[in-house]
Length: 160
Image (cartoon, rainbow, N blue to C red):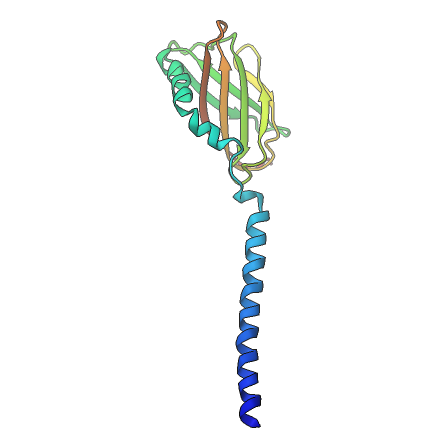
């Protein structure tokens, strides 16, 4: 009789440990799957397919000797500023630019920001409240319709 109850106890204990282990695994998987930090970049597959087109668009910027720089103002709300300088370090006007950006910890929360010429740079309103690293896809067109593209990483300190 005592052997039967001892066997039941150990079997129940092992099954309880399995139940605890399965419960922890289910909780961990649901937390990881529900966290926006672990989502994939929307449209990543198509971006991979179009990589050669993107590289040609990026090469057009390099062929012209242009430099592209991204900055954000320190005031709140932050303004995004993209400067495009030619080989003589003069601003390049008359571009049609759009920036698609996301914070590195929230890739699924992308923003599309149309940029307007301010006389020396292209500016746009973006929600840049979160400090840290931001990925910027800068796409645009020249006045003749030729497409250009580049990407930048922007590091932001907390707004004080």
